[in-house]
Image 1 (tube, chains in turn orange, yellow):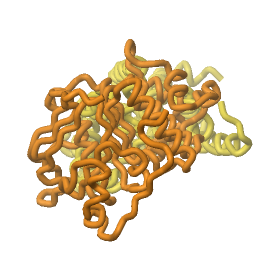
Image 2 (cartoon, rainbow over the protein chains, first blue to last red):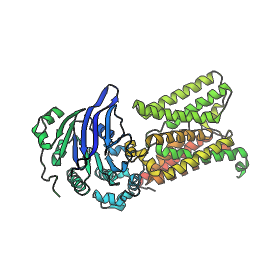
Image 3 (tube, chains in turn red, green):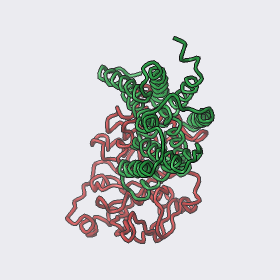
Image 4 (cartoon, rainbow over the protein chains, first blue to last red):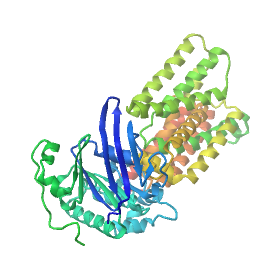
Length: 250
Length: 267
C-alpha cells in the first residue's frame, strides 16, 4: 500500500502558542502515501497541534511542512485532505444547522460524493431522517459518524483524525476500525490518527509515532511494546491488549 | 391609520428600520454561534465615541462613524485571535473603552442628543444613511446566498473551513465590515444600547425554533423586520424610543420560541 511518495513531511518543525514555550520542538518525520499512522502521546503532548499544523491552522515558528510535496503555505488542493477535529460537539452550540447543510457545506462540486453516499460509507442507513436532523440533536456516536462522513465526502487522499474514538462505545469502535480498514484497502487512503488511547492503537497499528512535545519513538507497534517508550511517555507502566480482529481482516 | 405613512420622516425611519431589521439579524446568525454576541455592544459604543468626538470637534461624517464601527469589530477579532483570550473579555474591554471615550468627549462639552443616540429615534434618519444601508444589505444578502456553505464552515470551526480551502482571513474581514456597517445602520433607529438586541434575540429565538440554518436566517430576519417596524410605528403613536418597544417585541418572540420548543414544535 505504501508508495514511497511522502504525503506529509515535517522538517525541524517548532510550534509555540506562547513565545519561548514550544508545544512542538524540532519535530521531523515523513508519512508516506498509503500508510496508516498513529500519533500517540499523553494529553497536552502536542498530538492535536501536529494535526492543526498539518492543516495550516497553526504556523510553525521554525521548520518546513509539506503536503504531497507542496509547502503548506502554497498548498491549495484542500479537497485532498479530510480532517476530523477533536471535540466536534462543541462547534455547534447555539447553531440550528442540520446534517444536510453541514455535509453540503464541505462538499466539493465535481469531486465530492452526495451526502447520502457519505453517510452510507460510514454506516448510517437512515439517511433521510439523519440528514434532516439538527446536528445538536445527534447522539455522540452519531455525531462522530457524521463528522467522519464530513471528512470523507470529497474522497480525500489524506485523512487526519483527532481522538476519533472518544465518543464511541466499544461496538462503535469496532465498526469504525472496519471502516478505516475498508478505506485503506479500497482507496489506499493515507490515514493519521491522533490518540491517547493505547488500547485503541494496539488493535491495528501499522506504524506509531510517539510525541510528547518532540518525537520520542517512530516504529512498529511490536517495537514500541518491546521498548520502554510507552512507560517513559506516560510516566507509568502501560499494558497493551491485542484484540481479536486484525488490520488485515475484512 | 395611514397618517404615519404620509410623513417623510416616518417613511425614512421605516426604510431605515427595514434595512436594519434585515442586516442585524442576518449578521447575528453567524456572530452568536461564534460566541461574539457582545460584538454589537462594543462596536456601537465605539460608534457612540465617534459621534461624541465628532460633536466635540464640530464635524459629523457618516463615513467616519462607519469607519470607527468597522475598526472596532476588526480590532476586537484580531485581539481575540492574537491574545488567545475569550471573546467576551475583549468585547467588554472595547465596550468600556468606547463608553469612556464618549464620556470624556461629553464631559468636555460635546453636545449630542443622548436620549436619541442611546435609545434610538425616528426623527434623525438621513436619506444617504438609508442608501448606504441598502447597499450593504444587498451585498450582505448576495454574499450569504452565494457563499452559504463556506460561511457555515467558517462559523462552525475555522480549522474545518481552512481544510476546505476557505480564505479564513478574508471571511473575518468581510464579517468585520458587514457587522460594523450593520450596527451603524441600526443605531439611529434602535440606539447604541439596544442595537445588540436586534443581532442576538432573533438568533436566540430561532435557535430554539428552526430545524435548519437556512430557516433560522429567514425566521430571524422576519422577526427582526416585524419587531423593528412595529417598534417604529409604536414609537410614533406612543412617543417613546423605538429601540425600547422593539426589545419588548423581540422578547415576546423569544418567549414564544422557547414555549414552542418545549412543546416539541420545530419549523
